Length: 392
Figure 1 (cartoon, rainbow, N blue to C red):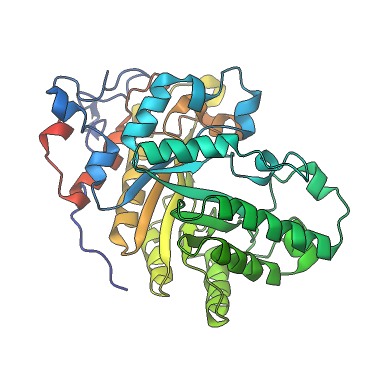
Figure 2: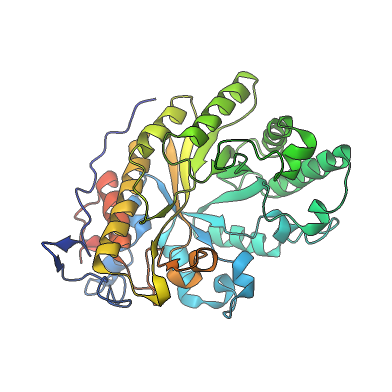
């Protein structure tokens, strides 16, 4: 499969440090210092187009996770999706693809063995339909965020197999024809590129063959959805992504309906950028697979609640731009998803002590240099660079 030929953004634009001086219009000086409102100073019709979705055009699906469940349940704010009007407005306007952050995971959907809690997932599906968006399903087989009744239930191998089959048939079947891509198997290799034979209840009790079964059951439940492997730290060519490359080739040879491979893209400015990201995605594309970046954020070190420096924001924007350009360069990479778009609801500070500011918008919804970096890369690929709606 050939690489796409695209025009990419040559450099980070708004918010870039030029000659040590902060370029006018940057949000880098302090939170709230970015665009006061989308389309400020433009005609109303153009202002409506001042979005990531418009910039992307048909070049790629630009998505975000819909905040809810998980760490959000322990925070001192009401549910973002239902109670934050600005969040909801931008969710519908800025993006063409949505992912349930936690609302389709086992521990959320299955509070007990007999119950499926679909209301929140249904609401995301309905919202997407109303706004002309596609949905990524996340996730069906994982070692993490499983309910206690499952992990501690003492089920036999036959019972576990029946439970997983029932779950996939019920969940995938409910949304059949309405899901763009499903993360069927999530994070099945550890950081040493070994199968999670102890951590993953499905692989531990049923063997690696259960992964192939999960893909087959998902295909039967929804023949239209693209079926993916998904993991973190597989951005570049490394032992972990090599393990997926080898496994997927074996599965494809056995006729298992694997359609795609995706890297989550949880990056940090304390580490170097995975410069072979495009090459890695391309080798999976050359197997005939779709590819995707599914959970992009770029965290930074902020000890003792420090504010990001201009240099940190410039580096973050560069990382966002380079991921966007890499995704756009690979034919068959149809989906680029941000793991949240506003710092208020990011999982990063809750999970990584002393780190944060990982998304493209400040807590007041003003735009960071990272937002403009993504937007400009999208516009360059879609042919909308320089469009008056995107001027600032």
